[in-house]
Length: 376
Image (cartoon, rainbow, N blue to C red; front, side, top):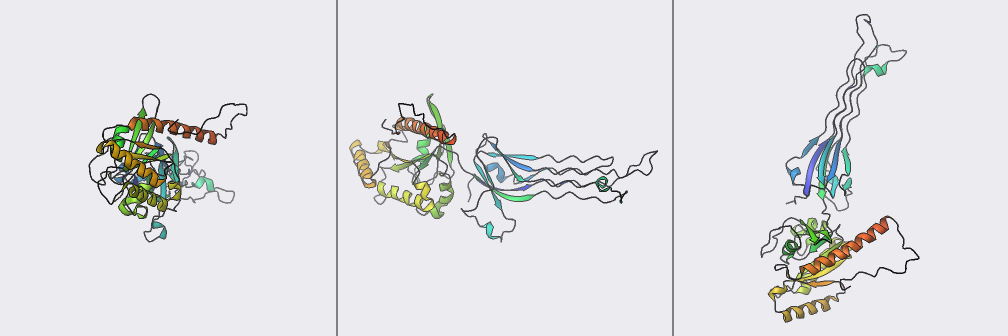
């Protein structure tokens, strides 16, 4: 089973047009020289990032994408028309991998170390994935002092043809992380206009969902609802590898924990430790990413019991980061979380812009920005 954010396609650039063999023949010039024109170049295939798309599902039905062939050359030194390039729209955040033609090729086995041909991370970015063939040469180009009537010509070269694997990495600011049925889908419904399926059983979410969170008039950010992880996810159990990939590009993670789970073997501490183990196995850098703790389902427990379990969890984890308590179903406590997320993301964006432009603080500045904290 694959997600709608992965697809395999075939791209075929156009062949170059053949050159023409022709001689000038007019009423008063019965034996004119060669005038065969060159062929046209074949069209290339480009992928174009389009912010209006958010899924690769269309490529499950339209797998073959072929550019136009170059026109053959013609007499009277007329060159063939070049084939039109083909531009295929893909969502922003698409990675492109080359798949071998031969299934027996060792490269056919998917590997996390396989380098992509390219990434389309910004709206309007283009990536050429198949180059059109070069045009053929007409006989007029073969004329020389020793060969006054050449009949040589060349065919155009074939256009490139490849099998590609497209992989969409969700470009979300915040990733929701947690075991199945922790309440991630309910939380994204409260935070945004996304409407994922919600039910009281594991694996309700089978596909990642994106939601835009608008915090009044102050700003917005994108949150990704990642399907719940299970033990062994870093090795592929429960489609875990595909799920974990989507967390790599997020700026921070929200780790949802169900404090009202009646299962005695599924304590909140155990639930957190299972997730941390899978993150570490999959990618230690992912484990080091900024992570907030969100304690869910406070509406299902008496206030004293919920507070008691909260303190036990924080003490067992020796937790030093931000922590929020809320009810994803009723929405109680979600607004403070959204405001804090927006403030933190705005700070991270400022820091990224400063690094990108190599800005340095002015030595005459008296005030300095204090480290961000949800308690500020």
